[in-house]
Image (cartoon, rainbow, N blue to C red; front, side, top):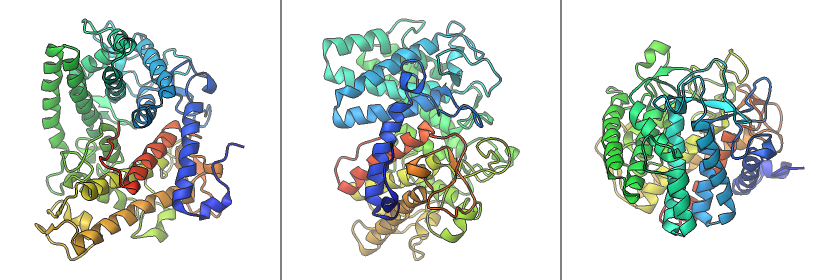
Length: 476
């Protein structure tokens, strides 16, 4: 039986459970790619679920995020047995790029690249859907640019040939997978798009931040490959996106809003899309949009707080770590419309961002600067803090903040452990009501591949942080 742990580990050491569940997640990811999953070679299925709900499709966004797990492991371990997964992914995505679909065709100014999902056999999905979704090409470019960088650094003739022929070929119109995605992002980033939850058409922080990252990484790759005009174009568009991103900061609270004018959707704008964007973009430290940035921490704290009274399972946890969902106003229950539930991947996103923030402070090491924006976040750990206070590195107060931050971060792992499915199974969601069983009550798509990818990447970053290895490895 493919079970990561027995009942003892449910109650045992957190480290042991995370290690077992991480191994289990790694196996589950590869069981849901290509022929083993009933899909075409190189394609990642969102879930094996075919009814209530039917997620047996390949989403461009999910596929890029899941495949980044393979890239992360390749860069971390240099295990070349992982390489075929990335090569097959590149081949499969190039084929999808050139397939006409309801969003358009490659030949029609690249519009078809905004198509969000396809059938698992690699054919176009022709049903009604939220189109276009412009985060997919950006995320795919981020993942494959990382693979191209790896191959170019290794420098074998076959590696260089693969990059030039399949990943980034200089000709226009673009016929290679990375080049096409970068041109799409540079052309359409300022056009309306559906969000990562496929619900709201407009401009979105998540889409713009991953677009910025794709263009910055793409510009560096273009320079390496002697495509200077493209590098200049990508850099120029990236600079424009950076200015646009600042419009998502609420001037009154300093929190980042997930979308423009959230009130028109009867939402606050506090959304898991923010921590997920920080992770997908691989930002670092206190840099703009980094995990230790004041705006990011203020938003993360308020986002978590928005769920404290939202779910019955959270009532006994105040003021500890709690289960979180997409956004507090959510009404998607995993099958239809009623009341929203917590998600595994959103709860994991909180601890993942916190681990990266902790790593910045401890490994730099860095003092903590208390601003009017960040005070509500840090005050939950020390109510004596004041605006403009500087907490010196390794002072008694600094250690208290670091310890409390780590304790809070670990609490979100405990939430996932408490409400995991039988045998460590991670579906899309888990039920908002109290479960009178050893494990949680899964909701929505079973064995969501993105859930396993989120768990694995968060566990890897946590392991580095716990081991104290420096430098802290950025997420791919």
